[in-house]
Image (cartoon, rainbow, N blue to C red; front, side):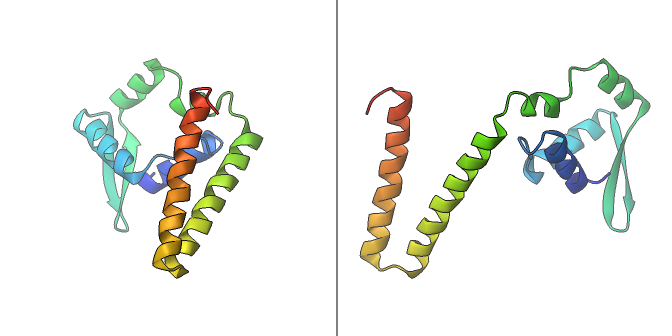
Length: 127
């Protein structure tokens, strides 16, 4: 399996709760290879990784798979609502940034900064 397949597999196994970045996966694969826990071979220009016998033993003896914990207790409906709200906010901000005047951009930036502060005030139980 190559690195991007691993990223997709982790995202799928965690129900979308955890999708590691290539910047975290590939250095980890290099460390595992340096420790003799995996090997790689090139196939069609891609590096394919597989567990060594030592790697399989370490995996069997190790803790629970992290993707199982990542998806445990997640309120998927609320998570979807949060994602929609965040993406909608960024889409609106991006539209203002691309097509707005300098004054409109400054106002949009103020709104974003105020929203961030208000979110932290929620955690502080302040209105």
